[in-house]
Length: 120
Image (tube, rainbow, N blue to C red; front, side, top):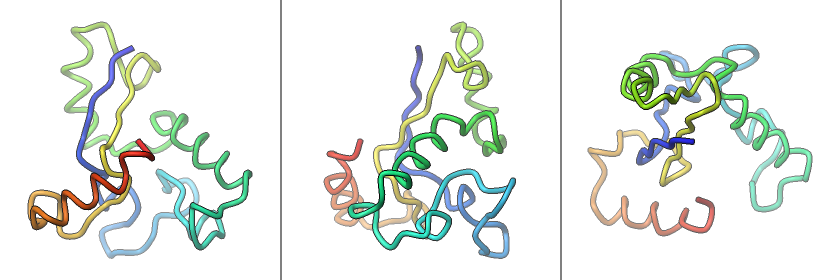
């Protein structure tokens, strides 16, 4: 198994180009809205299961191919692939940001990483 590591997901994992939350077959990952929850800390076991299953099924549904297909070209010579389940992707921070990660203040980046260490 090979893993790639990123800072955080892109907002396009959750929103279309008009800023509307992805839904139905276009949805890549669960959101609080899609789960009908207000907070992951108090989410029902069923909601947590859906998040887990959604992450596991990500590359078989509607992955952000513009990003991951570039990385896939690096993985293939290693005998790994997101699409066969021999590679996975992890983000240090679970939250998409706007502005993008590179444009965030240093103290905000540090706070986001520290807050999600236990989640990762």
